[in-house]
Image 1 (cartoon, rainbow, N blue to C red):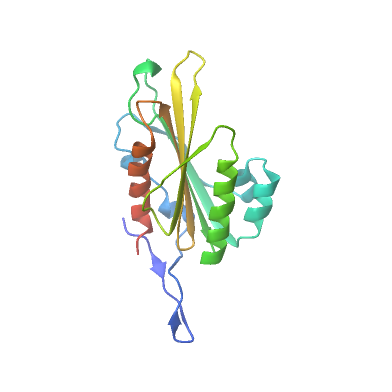
Image 2 (image 1 turned 90 degrees about the vertical axis):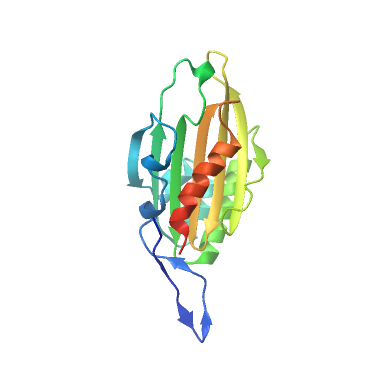
Length: 192
């Protein structure tokens, strides 16, 4: 699927590409997950600044001033038993913010990455070549029955869009590489 974009020309100089479709048009879809067994646990829906900030007043204040046009999120999950043998992602949340301008999206990107970096035990990682700006973080934890878990958060910006993809699963069964495959599938929606 190719994203819809508009190029605006002012005073003879082209401005950056601006995406104009609703944020939901740029989300990763269930059929792009590549691993069988996923179900849609939260269908694509609009999310406001309070929902994006999840109680973080600093993040809410930062996102409140970015010229947010709309934001959308969806979540996919697959149950694998036993968890100790699970391979591939198990829980995927995709969120896209559409700002009025590139400058606002860049500010939102910075605020979101600062927020994720501040999570205890979060380790910054390279997101490689993904969009105009990109950042990755990874945090390890352990399930109640002792299975090592990993959560990877990829945040990237393409023009006036900011995407956040959170991928969770068993450490050793999934990780940054799987998250990047999914991120590139989502980023394909953000090509003019």
